[in-house]
Amino acid sequence: MRFEDLPTPSYVVDEELLEKNLKVLNGVVERTGCKIILAQKAFSMFAMYPLIGKYLNGTTASGLYEARLGYEEMGKENHVFAPAYRDDEIDEIISICDHIIFNSFSQLERFKDKALQAGRKVGLRINPECSTQGGHDIYDPCAIGSRFGVTIEHFRPDLLDGVSGLHFHTLCQQNSDDLEKTLNAVEEKFGPWLSQMEWINFGGGHHITREDYDIPLLEKCIKKMQDNYGLQVYLEPGEAVALNAGYLITTVLDTIQNGIEIAILDTSASCHMPDVLEMPYRPPLFASGEAGEKPFTYRLGGQTCMAGDVIGEYSFDQPLKNGDRLVFGDMAIYSMVKNTTFNGMPLPTIAVKGKDGDCYIAHQFGYQDFKMRLA
Ligand SMILES: *Cc1c(COP(=O)(O)O)cnc(C)c1O
Image (cartoon, rainbow, N blue to C red; front, side, top):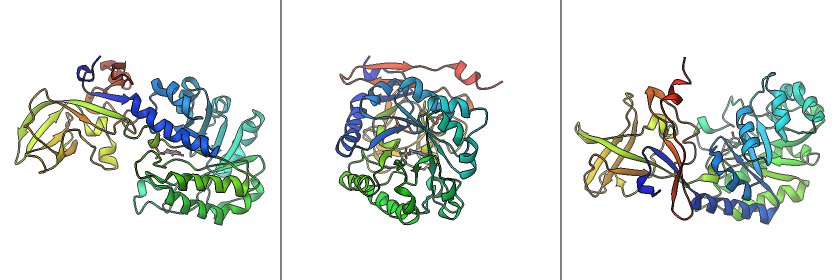
């Protein structure tokens, strides 16, 4: 099927662009001997897992369901970290995960023996208390009062028996200079225990596939931990895997005026691109400009009844009219994994644009997907 013939709204993942990212990541793996695994939180489109598995070493999960998905659909190294595990899920997690990372010494004490008996690697998440994000607290695991990771004040070297690795995750859409700073904090605080570990996990938030990302500095950081402490280094990016590798296509349903021109689309910021409101950010839109840049400016809004369901203001060469199709960019990550059926909104179709340009539908949703989550 042609791109133009896909139904709207649809998330369309572009196989060629995804593979381009995967080759960049695989280059880091090949040159350094580190391992890179997909953080499924950002992108769980399992139809692409066979392709991703060709280039990356496996998956990581934030809990049982993502862990099951990685196990079933990629079947390579499967890691898990959760702020806390439930008694009734830990056995299944241990049965399908290779690395089990704990957020506290109490969780470690509670479940470590079980995990070790099953031959699993046990890790501890540390909090290096090194904020590099400049005041964006909802994405900063090092913010004051954060629930993530053990700080040096609460670190218990006497309880490290059986722990083969340390994990930190402190970055979000950042470059390798911030990783370097963070690693310095990790060494300064936790350096004495690094040599007794087998592996270290640098978490996610590395924007490795972004144009201006400094890959040589990343590789220097990796080599330093390998050379100084003999560690196997893991990275678990989510965003970087599918950055700019997908679209959300939508149709204009109506245009109205209220002081400004407004277009109503068959998509929704709050349901289909929640990060636009949560982050917040203005998603790229093909063939458009900033407000006022081109002759016809519109506020683009969704079909829900929420006043704030607005994607942003964009300008166009021609007036918008019913039936026009718009294509938002960078809609593979943190999109389909976060969408909702709030207000009875249909979920967008999930589609693939193949390397030859031909498109196909991977999954379509309907009324039942709205109803089955309610009672
Ligand atoms: C969110 C998260 C990731 C992935 O982060 P990205 O910003 O998508 O690269 C990796 N590890 C952990 C523990 C996370 O919480």
